[in-house]
Image (cartoon, rainbow, N blue to C red):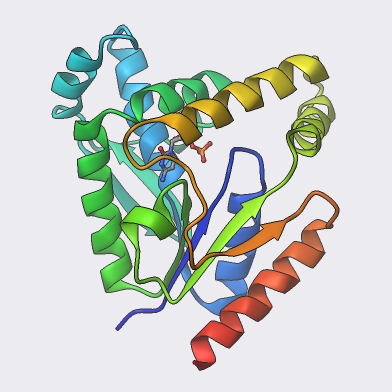
Length: 223
Ligand code: DC
């Protein structure tokens, strides 16, 4: 049986940075499920679909073939055969993914793909519904979070370091909107699984978080 670690939590909690680092050190594959939902959202944006039109999103989603492969340990997301890694990291695509991901037809396909990946390999998978829905039997579940003030400040620092001008209050408002949508949707909303370990990173450094999660992984593997 493969060893599976599920990490869920709100946007900007640092899930992907931590999961990537832990995956490397523990010899696990890192599966970034947000990237799959982002690829689907990119498809809808490129097709000019009205994001309020749920029926259209459902219909169009059947024409977006999303697959994953690994190149030197890096996850490559393909949309109808095209590597779209370079196009899915924008705020626009992230926002759109938060709107298109609640559509049942979108989730069904993604969840099927995610379950198959986890069944075939030792992995650490991050997202919103991994512990509650995709991998309910994962050997370790973590709910990684931080206050919206801290998450907004981290994002602000990231953007300003890249030379982009941005407004801290606006970033915080966007993060809170996204939290609300991800937590209040009907299908697989973001919530802490009953058996998940809560890690609040508001007052922790990245190194501390990585070290804590590595310890949790080691303990779970030894069981
Ligand atoms: O983690 P992220 O910011 O890349 O995710 C983008 C959006 O995708 C997020 O707002 C909600 C959605 N998502 C989801 O519904 N389920 C997942 N397992 C992962 C992401």
